[in-house]
Length: 440
Image 1 (cartoon, rainbow, N blue to C red):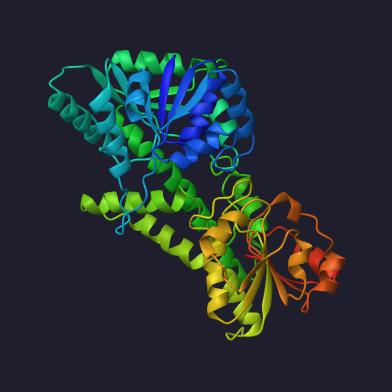
Image 2: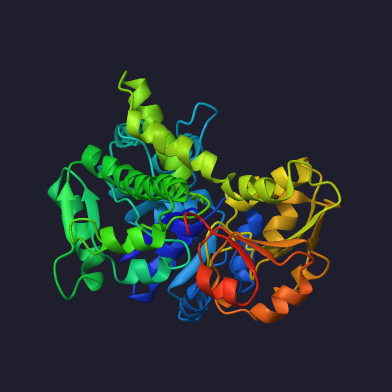
């Protein structure tokens, strides 16, 4: 099957590479020549475990190619995936300019039947706008070509996107004509050989399903963070509470970890967009407003603990910081708690030495030549000259550090753990003062 994917970000590049890996002929379009140049030179513009190998393998096999030629891309694939960004506007609503520009380009250049698939996370009703945009271009050309618009939201976790695409829990297809549904079934056949995973519904329900999934997961995180903060007041331990409620099969274990807040490209943006959608229709989503407020406050939780320990004026103090990415296995720092924490430490007069396995280049792009921020190439090197350690991202290499060495290097043997990576009893035994999230 010939497929065009518009956009080479996390969603587009992963989708295109994985679809090529099962035998399809895939062309990835991006209007950014720098991205296409990186791909054509054998690299990838993002960090995602396992993706580089798949891209190189399928390029070598001739099944995956890249272009900036909009007309060629629109004429290439019968199935046209739109996988471009939908950044938030100032009011939190999703900015659809790139989605609609892609739709217009397809309508402007298509030369036969097309299934146009919204893979980007888009508000309910976007399918209608995409349909209207394509129809307007066809009318302007004076041609009558058939096409279908499908909603096929992605459920890819950054850091595990390849695995999620190749072995999906479910495949949501929002479509309203049998020809498009049949093509989508054929396309996803290789990914559901064990059992049926494809759920067909109307376009609007599919669009809402994506937002609902991310909003639910964000709600669980903020709920646990609220309980963790209460646990500290009550003298309870959130880890024991997590085990107590997670063992209930009606609740389950996923997304019950307390920490210093969620970030990334999905949860913050999608919660805001869903709240904005409700507002547009005069429906106030009270719960999701609270989820967002709780998360923004949680990003300052570690700073509050630092201030409680060392006072509000941190002038002359230096902190080691482990973890810059919003989560492990990615270099993504969009809405990352680390950005808020570093900024607040700067505001209070402190300086920072930071380490992250993959996000250092992204941090340098964000912070520029910030003299108060120093980057090191090893976790322990960050501790040199530091008054205390702040842990923001739960990378595996942070799980079992040399605690004795840590205690001797730090000016004050104090650890602020925003991901509850260590047991308080262990830290006490090795002589480290430990401040977790909701831990006794």
